[in-house]
Image (cartoon, rainbow, N blue to C red; front, side, top):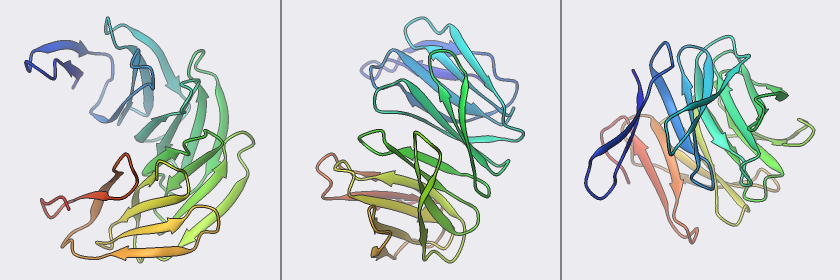
Length: 212
């Protein structure tokens, strides 16, 4: 199935991005709004011109589904997470693979606001933070009782939020790995987490058909 771009005021379909051979799992705008990235069950990620819908790059290197895509804050790099037990960092201009980070079933990737670190959510119940320049593992966040499905940085880069199959979300100190909060209340897995722009609130989305 294609990805689509819509006019957010009128609801009119603007673009139909065809090129993936299987379903698209994730989509992300570049920071300048000029490009889109998509991740697919076909084991690839793609970069598109968001104005014309033209396919610019196909990122080949993962051996299984690409679950997540995320742009670096400067738009120069793209991170992808896959069920092949890796995350990868790519040059978003050339498509060249820059780093491979090994971690079980990477279901989520997120850049720190300064672009120096990358966080991953993994199928072995942990999240990790990596040096985005060297690929060195910096921290492991342990505390969830099942798969970590998603991860997000606070706007100031001082905290991480994670959502898990264990039905909780957690907030962590991004510098030390200390668990700060556990958010209980969802009846099914927490599939997405998002910070408010001021960092004072956190939104969670769950398979229990609620957001909180």
